[in-house]
Image 1 (cartoon, rainbow, N blue to C red):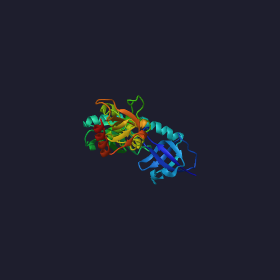
Image 2 (image 1 turned 90 degrees about the vertical axis):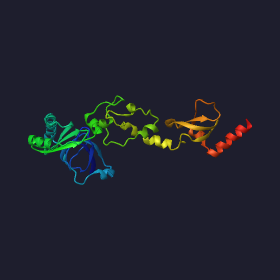
Image 3 (image 1 turned 60 degrees about the vertical axis):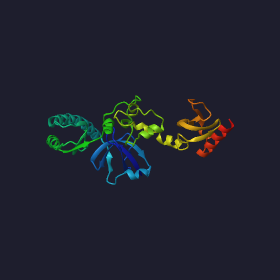
Image 4 (image 1 turned 180 degrees about the vertical axis):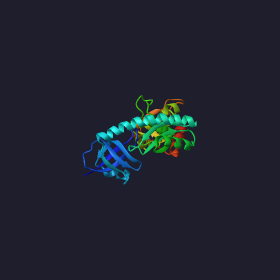
Length: 286
């Protein structure tokens, strides 16, 4: 019987999916050795299911080799110690070459045939000399990969302004596109310090409820729309989105009066001509 296994090879990495014919039972939380396009890797099983909608995410070349043995797990632990040592050496080499780059993570492939150094930099870096030095030290393939500041926050971790662990570190597999319009839709203050995450970019959580807000806002009249309410004609000046209510400034209210709040079922949009005629009639009979 075939199953879909979702495996994570790094603590904060993406989940990679594999089609697995059950030679031996593998459950969530087990470790497996897999062959990927990057090489042989060992990771933790995060997903076990029979939902074949994942098929589009499974590269045909990737496959599960076996369930991790005690020897594999021991090798995985020693790999972490080797990565820490490689990080210290690489930082010294960066300083020797006087390169403007910040090393944030090191990853050995499980079979030790390649080591990847992740770094951030504000500009392009000529690291060819650094690669030669590292290859001479480690005697294996060397890859230096530049990542963005969102990836840096995901790898290094930390706490958000909510006081909880960063979402990207805790559970997000991919970064979603976030825009300032999402904050406007949710009626949030457009203060950059309140909308920015630890990485300095817009907070990922702005995306979580955006679909709900857009669905409700699409049913509401836009700001500036003329509407008829149970208390008379007025203009929409704001929204209470989650409550499905709108704020209306009534024509009959005195200047500077607070807007009234109505459910969207209580109001009706009127054309500008109808509103103009209504005003003329009121002024004629007043």
